[in-house]
Length: 247
Image (cartoon, rainbow, N blue to C red):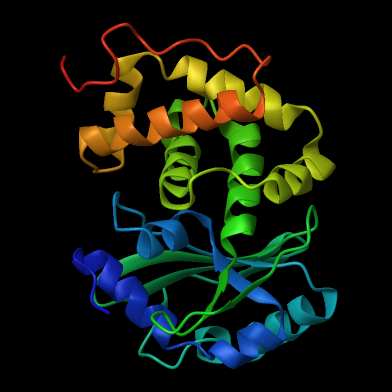
């Protein structure tokens, strides 16, 4: 499988250089925005590589491998570390350099929810299940939904997942709510209401290097599903002229 954007192809090569079976045995899964982008049509640019590990034993094995050998403990390709690796209770963070591209790589020690997935034939690494992608994005949206500097990427990614799968699974909502409670609903409603402002959706599309129509479609899909999930949650109607990309 070849990706359209050369930056995404480089990330795919980095992923394919990893030992997928080792990651799987550690309960470590490729997730976050870049995983969604690579698996669901490259609709925006995403250059960070995030894995999640909810296993205490698995995280220990990953940390030991990275501490002993640096990037060589996790990657087989000619990948160099741009700076010293950071290890702490929250995860492992590396800043990598590959084919003139800088990549922020992180293994997050996920302590909020259990996660799962399966080995992906195209990328060669375990990828988070679609249900857990939804759950993680619901959590991320609750953490930072109104942070304009991240260009509302969690809402857009959620919308693209809804477009691909039809709706947010009840299991994903339940899992996210076990961690964050009623804030999952509160911030889901808050972001779709905030993004009634077309200028904010256009801002997101520009920052994320995506087509405006794709951004508007994703938000419209998310809005409809948030209303389905929480019919009394206060989801406001779409602007009367709809989600077009006019100025």
